[in-house]
Image (cartoon, rainbow, N blue to C red; front, side):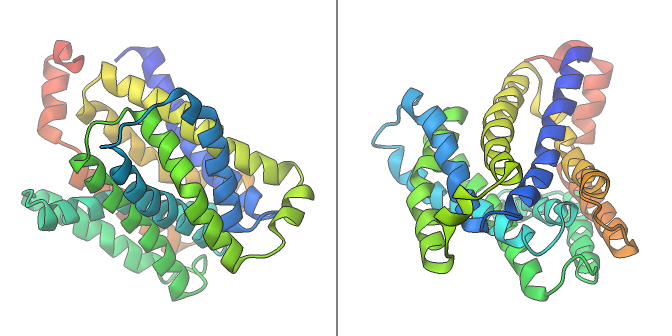
Length: 294
């Protein structure tokens, strides 16, 4: 891998990690569902005018607007209102092993024993995290787990859906999620427009960073890198995101670090790495560098 591409990967995972800090700042001034709605409004305004969809793709996008737009993003923002940036990132990382289990049950995909061991280790990490004071109540953990579950379901839907370009997918999910998340905000939150009109730089930074940097810029670079290199070489780097989120939460937001959080994070990341990294493929890349590029 070219050195400049390695630094691009580090930049992408750092953008995603810092998104947790940006969201925490935004939540200081805006209600979580309204913050999510504004994020989708910005993404849709930037992408939808340049992306067309077919009638065949629309039902799949509507489903994803609920599972990815509402279940994943909205519940993540709600959960992060009650916990710190690092803890939220760690729990949502479970979306990967959950997706693998769902694929095994629903899509009849086979999992090797080592993958099942990795998933079990990840789930044990959540059990450890449940004892951390950074998760104030059991229902906060449930909200974050539902967010991870929404991400996992969305991956299966994307796998079964007709081909949709990544930025088209991002833009139209955001557009179709606006009435769903906006309606939930209208029913359960209050004084949203007042909060927006009185928001300072933290509120607006949370909206714009989450929409433009995390969704549009980072995902564009990520998909570009996936086109240049094999998936098994690129995907493991995404495991750095929760690790960096924990560090940024401590350094920028002053989040606490305790033994529950440290051990739980280690188990979740280690278990996910064992479940998703194809060591045989990585060894082949190391022995035959020319096979790294598609």
